[in-house]
Amino acid sequence: MAIYFFGDTHAGIDIDKIFFVKDYTKEDFIIVCGDFGVLWSDLDGKYKQIDALKMEENLKERIEKLPCTLLFIDGNHDNFNRLKALKQVKKFGGVLGEYLENKCYHLKRGQIYNIDNKFVFTMGGALSIDKYRREPNLSWWEDEEISEKDLETALENISNFKGKLDFCVTHTCPQSFFKKLGEQMDISHKIEDKNPYKLEIIYQTLFKQNKIPKYFMFGHWHRDISFNIGTTTANCLYYHTLKTIENDALERRNYKDEIKWVKRHKGILC
Image 1 (spheres, rainbow, N blue to C red):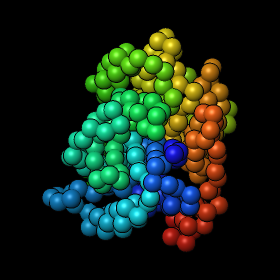
Image 2: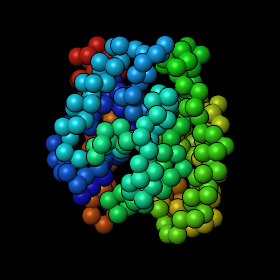
Image 3: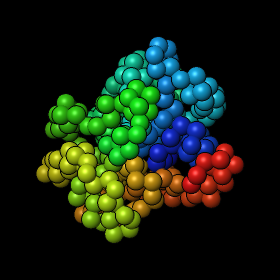
């Protein structure tokens, strides 16, 4: 049994990386750190998008053929009308949204799940810096950011949790990560975002309650970067995947060349 962590998949743009892995077993789990993007169009009504729904059907068929279970948090490029409409089910010690029964689920904000005997805290959400050129309910949704209610839920669940987390999975990262993140990439285009400050409150709460996880996983920044913050190893993921192995270690796999090849052949800039 293993967990495979991936960064943003953006529906048909970057999702191929999860299918490059050839050694999944039925006991394994995939966790996507936001911007899953598969549920992009409303199913009917004013905001129904035929081409997006056709792509979704194709991706659903591919996901259903995976031998393992696919889990995802939301990012800032997801259709929250669709996510909120998913059937709510109890699984992994919490409540989640069921997209494909026994196959694919939305991990909700501020929750702590027991996945493969690992305690995983989840918090989706971030700011779309390009929302000025997006269309509401077609390519941008107002629920993208972490709300005060999301934050309250997270803090309550953390306080009630008796133990220590193994992983935090978020879309963007806490504000205190910015210094080290900025040493390896230009972050100036995404710093006007209040969501990292809310994640910082969560991070500091975990620290004060001695519940800091060994690993912090996030996407959003479209880079593959790793650095240490205190006792935590922070991993920003995009082209890479991290797989849990023995002794609480992680195995890194790089699919950058494969993804870029696929995107070029799809005519997608990379």
